[in-house]
Image (cartoon, rainbow over all chains, first blue to last red; front, side, top):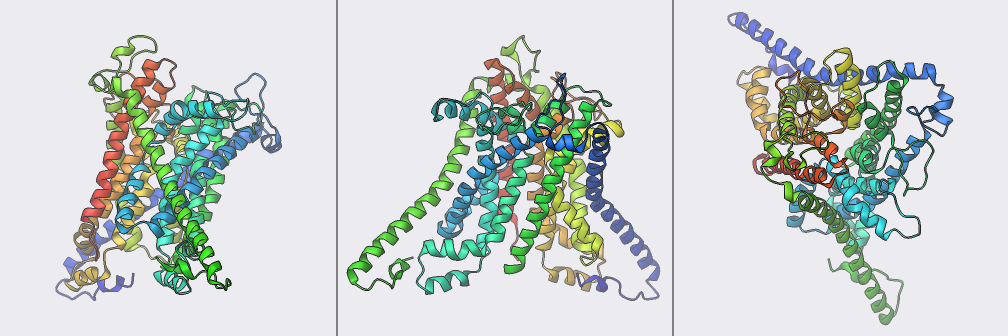
Length: 316
Length: 304
């Protein structure tokens, strides 16, 4: 940005009038651009304001202790309990299943693309990954419920079979959804590792696998972890797959993944879509759960931004 | 790479060396196969997903889909379609594009060409945009519910949905535009200034035209993402069966993802088939747009 100064040469006397008008135009345009940039700040402020007011109202009626320690979430029942743990546990379960699927597949695909695939294959596969990353999540939900779950129910080992709605199938499909994200970002990180490191390793008689796993992978680790963090953040906030396939029960904490359970997002989607009076406590539960979700994803986003910076600093 | 041979110098005898060599080679081959399998499994799942939707919706993939309205919950499944969802998607997405593309592109121009990156408020702005890109879409729905629909009094209308979707995909437009602008070399700007151009003349006549492919790619990807979003609109009360086409920014609406969510939630197979057919339509639109976006980038982006 060192070119700023060249734009304002000392005004000559004959053209000062025209230049003055010109400068006013420039100022107007700059002000306009600033306003456009400020929309993003307004969005964040809006989100915080929208979440905060009803959340505070919620905590006037429900204590923080009950919110975080009670193990039942039944705001719409006659016997009301406001313990968020069932929602949090379901969210963590689906997320864990999702990353257990997405990390091996995504990283494996990324190592293959970065280290093994020919240039032609890479140039063909990467765009396809990007195109597929745009499949709407409602479609994944449909797939989970009707295509994958019957197969899961049929071949599940053990006597107890997964239900029509279950955490397992939602988590697996969410993992499939995240694979393109993790593969694409990890591949970027590994491709950014300088050639000289690989050549140095080959010169020391390393095999291809050793170069991939002991040189390139560690060198790209912060970028790869950033892709994991981003994947986890997407899994936490994913709504449609869990709303469609994971079920809506939240009256107790469920650790068994073949049972149905509502995640935080599924609860929000389900309750907010019903007709609820604005001044009821039901209405504020949506915002309280939303605040918790926002704080969790915010922490992960900050972590992932830091990690990406770190790997950029090293090699770019 | 034929460098596999010299791995273990510890083994002294030729015989032993040959043995380890073979072991190492097998390890190499297995490793490579496992990696290929990872990529293949991911692809096969996606192929399965698309073909499953086509098979399930095949019977209903005909003109009924866009000629007819969704009907009440029990009657006339055979003649039901998703016309109001198609027109609703068009209304909402066109409004979203009008709101979000200029804002995103101008905001990116400010950050890339005007902002002093050493100032704390500009760094905050940048961090804020990166964070917004990772905020779950349902949180944007809550923003729409609490502020836009209730406090601004816009209700559950086309304009509320469009504002929420525009804010949701704004970071995508900004990040893509900034990258495209950054790729234009400084020498072009300096040449323009040397000819006496002002800052805005330089930006609008030299930098932006050179950055168009990158901006177009980002914009199309953003719009495509908005088309497929359902979660924020569900929070905005869009789940009710709307059987009319929108006739303005303040009318009620439904969109394809919302209608799909409704249809596949019905117990009757007939509804699920219509839902599957609507999924094929939605996938067709989204995958086509994404393909265009990637094609534009590969074909038209300049390498300086």
